[in-house]
Length: 606
Image 1 (cartoon, rainbow, N blue to C red):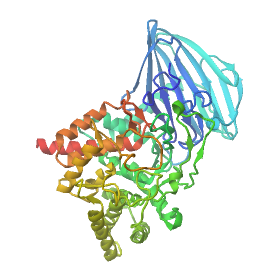
Image 2: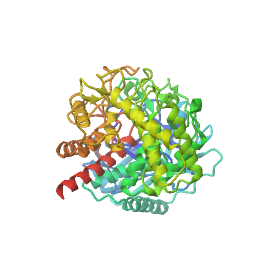
Image 3: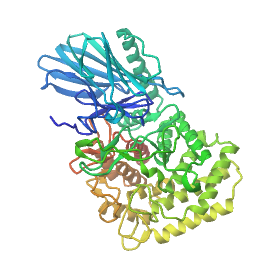
Image 4: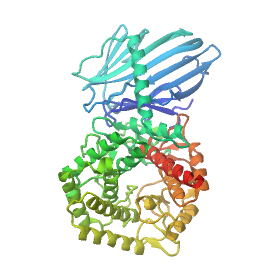
């Protein structure tokens, strides 16, 4: 068996403050606690030998496996089928919805046999702090305590476990109708130990978790053609959001490669202003006003703090609690997924200049009266001050949306989103009668538009291009141009841009971000098609009235989802999922594309 399962062979569980990945063969090979961005406890996904894992599976190595979610929940079912019987492992984490960080984080794994007789084997081998911190084991009947600096992990089991060095293992044989449970609780060194294990209590927690998720999904107002994919994407976005602050992380993982064996291996367990801002529209499309509003409050706090460098109001990303320091370091002791090194902790892109984030931030703050009407006078002063700063700062080269490390350029997308910032700001000032330097903002908005039209347009390609001074490079980020209103969706210049993208960036309906060979980004290697861009392509096609290719692309993209409906960042040349997993950007863009395409198809039918 491959030491590293395919990235797609995982399901996601979480408690709204952290998350874990479970392989389709019952192995927890990624789990960080107490938060998404905390040091890992299990990280075999990044190093099978040093990372640590938590395995519960059929003792029959030839048993076939199937993994699924209990409908409309984040409860994961892994089923093992063999000639002797059929057994299941149910994995979930009780959700913490409060504004305070939870004291304990609990990963519950119940096992049961539904046909015949099945023996289950269990191994729990934690490796704290990305495998850098040693731990000691205290073993009592039914309870194993793993102690490492600053953290404890309690393993409670309804069947006997035995010591295996500083780890534990055990097994249990269950006949039809019988069940057992193993519960791992992570807490701080000074926090109270978990209560004794109760099988009845676990059953109640299971149904409480199912009721929570199904009740939440019922709050969606989506009534379109793809409810299963949209609901799963919504649950995934919810799972990737840190409940105490309302801040979504870009992905649950770090270090998973955009090219196996390559160096494009980033830490995505942080909150990007761009990603979170675009998620607001996706959440509002579904009717989840509370979640959308929570992020705008988090975003407003960042603007009030003005934590960016060199006087900038924002930096591009933060930790989930708003902490701006994300120093990047290399974890040289980890071999990386299938040898994809280096494994990076933290993210140096936090120090980049990416001017487009102001457009996305204003986009989020202006979407829907449910949010915009709540902005009081002090909040408006902060927003107004931000646009005054941008009036002096928009016309600068930056690193752009894709966080390239090949030097700053005059990126067309960055200029367009600066235009969008002023466009949204002017609308808000008019709609809510707020004081603003209207004349200055208007002149700046118009100057940006004139500049993009003159310098961001290629006559030879009849298309808008990635950056000024190079008319040979197209960029899929520009697919957002009609959504933000910079061009009309059926403008001839936009339709010819779509045609040019189809010729150069689209491969069998899947979309690349750009061509690194034509536009060097400072990194070695290549990457797959970018799933976010494919869904943005669907959105743009639908807006342009090209409904047949839009629907074909959307339906085909569904076939690249994994077995439980999750997407990573990219799709590789052989159809494999690449990059950190699951990626929030992909799932929020799926929701956006579904909403736009549904509306366009309904209009056509009408």
